[in-house]
Every structure is written in structure tokens, then in C-alpha cells.
Length: 313
Image (cartoon, rainbow, N blue to C red):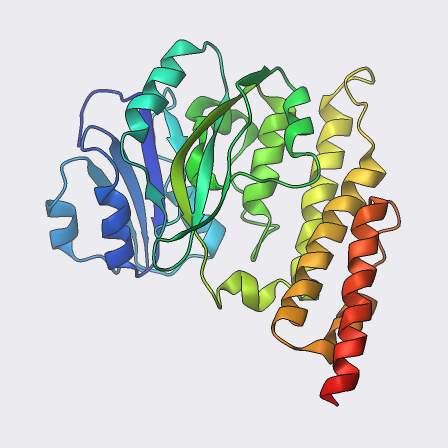
């Protein structure tokens, strides 16, 4: 592994996916250090021997998901910028030269947010997120970019390690399913200086039948959404002055909840579980402070599912 303190390091939490992990590692230049948390210690010894830029933390006992994510970043030097891709993501050719040039060109930035593609299991691009222009925000103004949802994915978010040490890593105690990444990104936007960079540098993989597909229409999912937004609201109250804390927190909390509720309803509808759509809606709280257009979309899905259920029955 490179003995000099690097500008950029990639932290990868992995769990028994050597083939996909190899694709990711091969998309990262050899002069970029990589820290891997091997959950369950599935990687063979020969994997580490193939690469000089890799260090591996082996966890014999399988850790919960966000404990594993944190294990991949703890030993990284505090002067580095780091990103935390999943082990099935990829980096685009030439991205790291641009990333390093960008980091060197802007001073005192706590978080850099680049763009990312969304790819399917066959590496086909199915969507993308990219900032429209270069923007730099002092805290807490960066939160306005992702106030009602986090559009970027983790492989394209580069945190200053010393900043993460200060604000904390993924919340491994309160989250077991979702929202830990979104909560960390919003927390960093609320507390740090952030730069949005209009360049796609990575590809985030989306799977059919993924854990998200299986769990998005559950009360467990929605409870963790509320934990996320409650944490951000309490953090703002404790860290911001009255002049800084001008956010409409009722709208913030309910709009994020409503968008996740809508995603769950649409997932049930897509999978032709029409009779379960209204049951799931009734099991959740009503987000009265959400945007009108989001509530209309929720009721549209409810009505369409009722009609479909009549024809199916």
C-alpha cells in the first residue's frame, strides 16, 4: 500500500461479493489507496496479494450493515478525502485525475459532491444525477440542495476524514435498514462547507429484487425515515443560531416521509400488489405538511390501485 499520505482514499465495505468487488477495485487507479472491510472474512488471501494499494480489515463475525461501513473508514488518515462506494459500484475512466484536481483547486472544503450514473445489473446506464453548476456553500446553506431528499449516491461523495471524525460516521445504532447514508450526507451539509461539482465520476448500481425493493413498503423503512429527519431537526436546533435556522422543518419532515411513502406505494403497484396499496397507506402516518403535488401523486396511486384491484378480482 502507498506509504505516503494520499489526497484521496476509497473505503469499501464488502460482503461475499468478490467478483463485483474486483470490478470496482479495477476501476480505481493503482495510485489510489483502498481500505476494505471484509464482512465475514470471505475474501481469499490471494485477493490482497494482487493489489499493492489495498489494505483489508477482516471481520470474522458478520457485522450489521452500517457497522461494516464504518469499519472500512476508521483507519484512514485524517488528512484524506474519502468516498464510500458499495462493493458493486464502479468509477468512470479518468475520474480520479479530475477528482484530485478539483480537490486541490478549492480550499477548506469539508465535502465534495460530484455526479453519478445509475446502472443496472448489466452495467447499462438507467439514469443519472449531476449538479447543474459549480456551487460552494458555507454551512448550513448546502442543505437546501438536498432538503427534501438526497439525490447523490455515496461513491460520488468525498468527505474530509477529519470532518467525519468531528461530526461522526454512519449512525450504526439507530439504522439497520436504510437512511444512514442520507442522514450522514444531510448532517454534513448542515455542519460543513460543501462544493457541488458538475461532473459525473461514478456509477451506482441498482438491482431488481434488491433489499430496497423488498423493504421499501414496510413500516420498518418508514420508521427509519422518521428517525433520520428527527435527528437532523434536533441537530439544527442544537447547532444553528436562530438566524441560521430558517428551515421549515414541518415541511421538511413530511415531504421526505411522503416521497418515501409514495415510493413504497409505487413499488407495490409495480409488482401488481394492488390490494396491499391502500393497506400500506393506512398503516403509515399522513404527511399533512408535504407538498401538495406529492400528496396528489400519492392519491393518484391509491385510486389507480383501487381500479386495478377491481379488474383483477
